[in-house]
Image: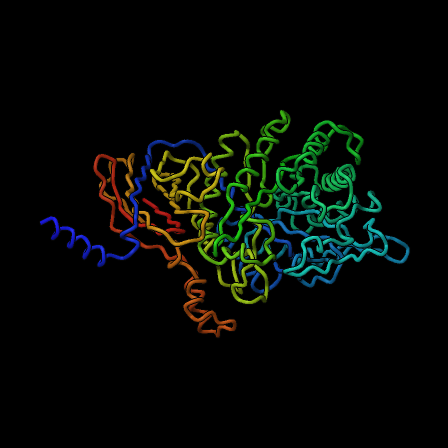
Length: 554
């Protein structure tokens, strides 16, 4: 009998799919009657180095998709908005020719291209997180033999992005007047009430050598004069910064001291108006044993260090914080095997797992987290799925964008929820390579409950499925509840996987394009109604590795 049972078990194992043999159980509990606090939609910020893509066909299509997430509450940040040039887009470059000078050195302002960019945002429900920079050629204090525009391209050393654009102004009064005139123009064109909703910040990563060629004090001065220009045109404008790389180290310490108690270079007063503070946080993927291994621990450590630094300043303990760039690594336009995670579901599952922990870190340190900005957009007219960090390729949305669509469906009130396979926050900060993180967040909006679950590991490898047993309580007296599922995984809502099955064509025809477009869409699936007994209900589903699912119960 023992031999028969063993043989039967072996035959059954052969008949089952491999994932079923290796799957593991996960218990998830959600109590819809126990709110734990508000959940801010901090995910609604995006950005890119290349501002001119916003006026091009694929850029405008993607902006429309971003605006649909949360109309007039989505923000976009772009570098290079004040650069001198003809507006031609290029990797890690952009220009608007907003400021030039005549032969006598008098300012010449031209808002045509900046207007086109901002119009592209506003027409699609997106608002500016307006970065003031970089330095127009006529105002740059760079050496005369320094090329103004850089010659960088993918594969080159990163420091080759440097040029005359990243120097302090040669005339601070002219710099302030430029910012004043631009802000004044925006108020006149778009209306005071509209511009009051925008964020204004100066420069990018002034603590790093590639983006700033002045001293810290010269940056404080450049910052002060720019903020004075904004405030002169619109006194109630929302201003801040400094969008440092990482938590900013000693540079950020000096900046915080300056804006709190230092002498304002532009006004002579004490301190500089600061309505929000911004720093950056990045992960560090690497290529190990033939696969990508993400570095979420470095990303989360940078977030925590930034929160600690700001929370330690009594005057800014409650100041809103925007993580002005928050990404798995540092260069959206840089290719390489370590960045091979970008097209598929490693990026989408990483996004779900990392945002959850950033929300958790903000609660731990009791900071006022206002935004988490994903530095990813699109690269116009590049090879299909070329491996850049973007949200869409040639107008086709990537799986990661569907996670933001899930976030857009979350409610404003966080609920008590737990998962037996969710790694503790401190374990996530140590690294996510040994155990899978199958985590959960749940929200409520009126009688509607939303439950998002992700299945993540830093190693971009296949692995066992998670068999989820969802236990819901606090559902009230209603006997049945409608339940709708949204899903993105290696097989679902995944245009990249469809493209690979097509044979990876580099010139898809119009019919193939429609197939890819359809494959990118995350379709809602109505599940069997939940039977509620004494306010409780249960549901069993399977979530594959790198899958993210959202359940809406109403």
